Length: 175
Image (tube, rainbow, N blue to C red; front, side):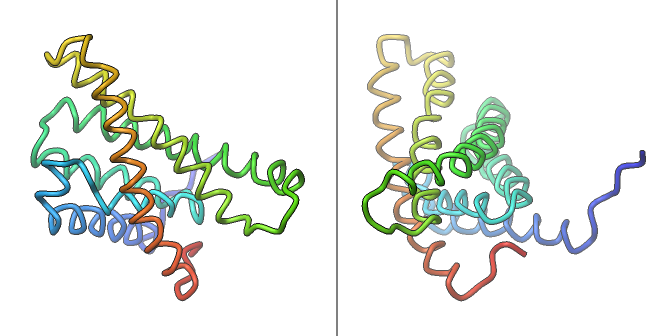
């Protein structure tokens, strides 16, 4: 069975998401690189609408990390994004019906998925904390690095995700 190549439209959409990630990160450079607060991380929630967006986000992370953190973070950061976006979207999809069934009040399914993906992706920062430790920070610094990264990632996702959620009412992000 022959596997189909992605269409030009699909490739353009992937490139558009990658470009958005890069521009949002670079525009807010000091926050993005010094503090680690990337509003562009809100684009991670696009994975809930269409898995194709994961490729664009991964490409964006790969390119942005080349501007500051070098080859190790280009590889580890983009692979981590790729794996945990697929994993987070999968877990969010599977847990949402379970949570809705047990919730005593009505809650939007997409908000549950945002919450689950946000938790999974924030906790995934252990990969980057491990990278920092392996590059010389020392094992004694792991927990402080990890916990600060989880906090900053959660703030990034909350800020950027709020924007994506609002945009989703006007733009069909599944296409």
